[in-house]
Length: 476
Image (cartoon, rainbow, N blue to C red; front, side):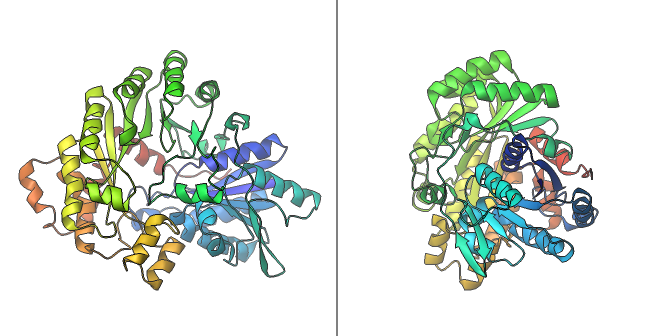
């Protein structure tokens, strides 16, 4: 059968893995890709108007003539998925499957949309393969685990199958799907692990663990040899310059990291970037990262206020340990950027300023300040409802993924301060202390928002993100 995937803005490892499984079993796959050029770090509708994606998408569907169209959707992509599925169904009678985090966490909201025929909850490789093969053979598709579908006007909710325990059994991801669109060029995205053992209130991981019955194998590691072999294979194919490990937390297992550091340095020896959690840092880990070639770290600072971290974000780490470990990164000589969340429920202006002060003291290369978007059914989502920050209207907006977590707060508490902080904090971190008193006194004009993009992350990452986001898609 022929399966056409659809995605927006960046590369999707999930789609690439599913495509590899399907191809391995004799099916043909392709991709329609919206580069989202006007949606790099903030939305710029003027830029988006130059790209005629919808027309190109319909042309691609006509030429490829797929048996199934499959979307992957984060919550913030769901409005785009609804728009695209509506356009498709107006011209084609092709079944549509939607997988990813949004249908996993909000299955009813997703499957009840009239133009979506099936959803996949959880890991999608084997459920999608089973769906395709049963459609091809004419067998019943009503009882496929992980798949929800509409049967005679009713929703058939199938249970979740066990997690893939041995990640090495999966073929390497089908990178060709996105490479031809310029979704990556100079850097190579890879995951060495799936899952996360922690339960931050704003993250989907707690929900996913519960969906899988709190399975003890929720956090799973590929073997070091499997990771190295993929990187060797990819280097010959794509000649990348840099690697980004997209794990929720990289190198959590010290024994694995020691083995990785030795083999990576000897066999790959390319600069790489990864995501770390402050309380899991040690001198030994940072030394291994540095020696193996780690050039950049994204670190989840999230809040500079201890109460907000512990009571609201469920990140149980003291200011003392936070500062100690952040300074360990500076001493290691590895560049790092912080990830921060502002506009949290019950957070005061003073507590928000603590986040600025912590960043100001440690002086990261870049700082990304996300305005809280309480993803549906997460712990912090329920906290927002409890505190009165989400009424029925806003709950629907959240479930639809309509509001942006980048620039427009869904929570109106301290609205003006949150918007200004989001724009100006990355800039003011680079200015002398004298300027801090003007943080909330400058109007949030669009020109300042544009200027702030440069300060959101390290300059090299900024250049790559802009370059790869502005490459025009090719219709194959």
